[in-house]
Image (tube, rainbow, N blue to C red):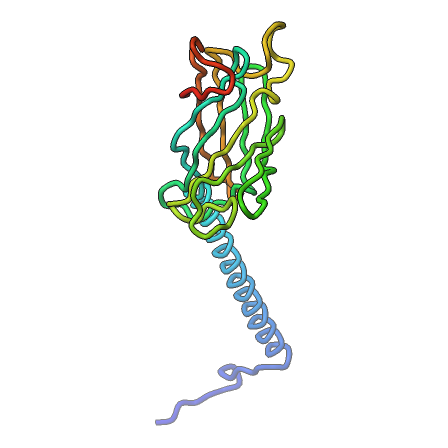
Length: 212
């Protein structure tokens, strides 16, 4: 009626076994902690990368229209009217760059325009573009944060193309020339515009606007 046990049926747990068991638990806990921290880090990195990718696509400007200004047988400047692109959050033109690429010249331009309180002071030379306010809902100069905001960016092609034209012509873009403009916001959103100068300037005087 009773089971009979002998010494071979009994197990003993010594202090060594207990230490090994505790060590295994600690190692497992540390490994789990490392995995949790790594997963959290990867999640945060993925979220940041996703946000940056979205900003590169959405945070950019839209060029509404462009026109040139005639110089002496050349186009001496380019004016672009810009606003926020659809779905974009605010874009600060003060932190926006314009890459200018023609057949003879490549230059990266930054905004150096300052506001005098009553209007704007446009400055534009070989390494900068000017900025002139058309409409701005909240008066934050250079910051496009509403679809109603409009600014005109001016690029002085005469200074940028200095020394690249044939003798006898003033500096600027010649008829038939093409120029590529890449407008890049601080977050990386880019808008590309390709402009071709008119084939002839007959009837145009220095200072006249011309459609591009």
